[in-house]
Image: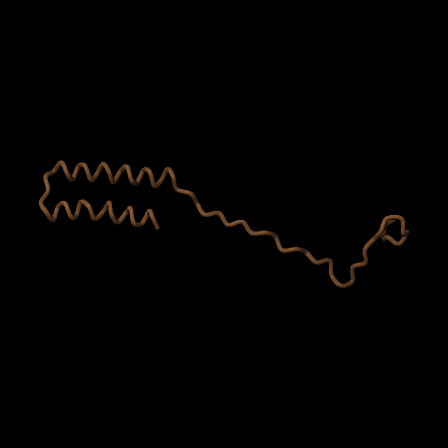
Length: 76
């Protein structure tokens, strides 16, 4: 959102300068500020990372817990 507002301001400023018939130095200045703004937006851009927790796995209704020393465990 902030980068969008910055882009709108960078594009609007030279257009307003042209509408008021500013000197060419003003257009060069707006170009330099626009390039700096674009470079800053690219360098400090932070991608959105969505980290989802895995769903817990239920063992199911037929699960029988195996306790140590009970001799009831499958496989030993």
